[in-house]
Amino acid sequence: MSCYGELYLKVQMEIEELKSKKLIVQECLSGSRAYGLDNPDSDTDIKGVFVLEKNMLFGLGQCRQVSNPSNDIVYYELGRYIELLLANNPNIIELAATSQEHTFIRHEMMNKVKVSDFISKKASETFGGYAMSQLKRARGLNKKIVNPIEGPRKEILDFCYVSYKQGSLPVRQYLEENGWSQENCGLINIAHMKDLFGLFHSFDQNVYKGICRSEDASDVNLSSVSKDAQLVALMFFNRGAYSQHCKEYKEYQIWIESRNQNRYESTLNHGKKYDAKNLMHTFRLLEMGIEIAETGFVQVSRPNRKFLLSIKNGEYEYDELLVMAERKLAVLKKAFVSSKLPVEPDYDKANKLLVELRAEFYK
Image (cartoon, helix red, strand yellow):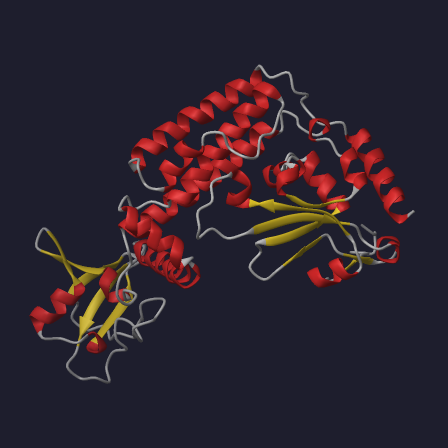
């Protein structure tokens, strides 16, 4: 970083450019096929490592990652790769530990990158944290499936209520019972009473501005009211609930537009109304984390394929899986407390390795 601002220029590179210039030094199968958890419909994910050309590395242009539009093929620049290994990033740890069977390209120099030189107790937070993020995503999807937001977005009037006897009435019902329209109503603020308004009505359409301007209005509408106008009711606008509804409605529409339809239909087919794939990866990450703490070894291809696929196939109840995941997380944390792994990886050793790898590649 320069004291004059950002020194380096981000450079866009394409996968074909990496291949044509022979900059890729490692390329491996990734995702469900590498874990041994694939089925005939599974995507083929690829991850790899490339090295910047000398003129780009020594100049102002920098490119740290290259991917295809769907992000199922991703290559990391060698420096970024080492950084992520030091951070014990699960995706990168798995890439470094990928078996020869699932490796398409591996430059001889990459044999110097030993996963054991990078694994540390930081994996407790990364593998456990990634697992919990998957669990959080599964919970979010569960909420969307169980409580779909159907139909058009609700309006302000759906969150307004008037005082009535010893309780309240929805303002729509109140207006209907009186034969009034919201356009003929006027509102004024009630001092010191947040979101509480005085409600007035006139059959003359030119007197008041209405409760709200339109169906998609973001707030109620205030009117000028004469001193001798008669107050007909007190109206409360539940602003917080309206704001939350708008937020959830927008998120729901974005989710519908961007969701993986095949994955969503699979979720509906098993009938349990949770994202089984996210929960499968929750358990995969937790179990890998426990293995790392206890053995210091990273096993990408999962030995308990049957159990993990049973989660993916919806053979467990949602609440049952949540309890199981919390228990495994506790086991993971306990395992790292007693683990013989170093607290941090050796940064100096990693730096020397990176310099050595670049020198060998450019030679």
